[in-house]
Image 1 (cartoon, rainbow, N blue to C red):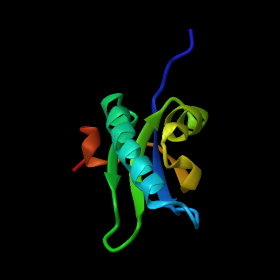
Image 2: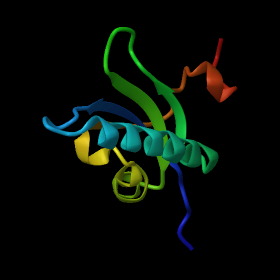
Image 3: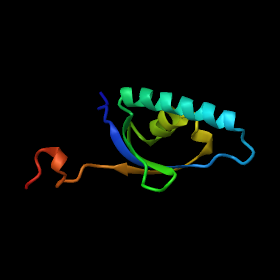
Length: 105
């Protein structure tokens, strides 16, 4: 039997609205994006999301079984995805992470 492991990924997202896109379309997609982000958070896929001060990009921690699921079934479902440039970095726990509970302090 295959063990199911959830992986964490650091995802940097820069969204660029295509030139000539109407404001109604931008507003519609942004509203849908907020709804989808809440759904993904509720299912445990979206863990944390930040926006660097003064920048129009996001940095988040996301969870999926693997990178294919992350792209196809998670990030690929975002309404703004066609306008996004993504940088995905797979993460693993660090032995000194204070959140692990077993790190030497």
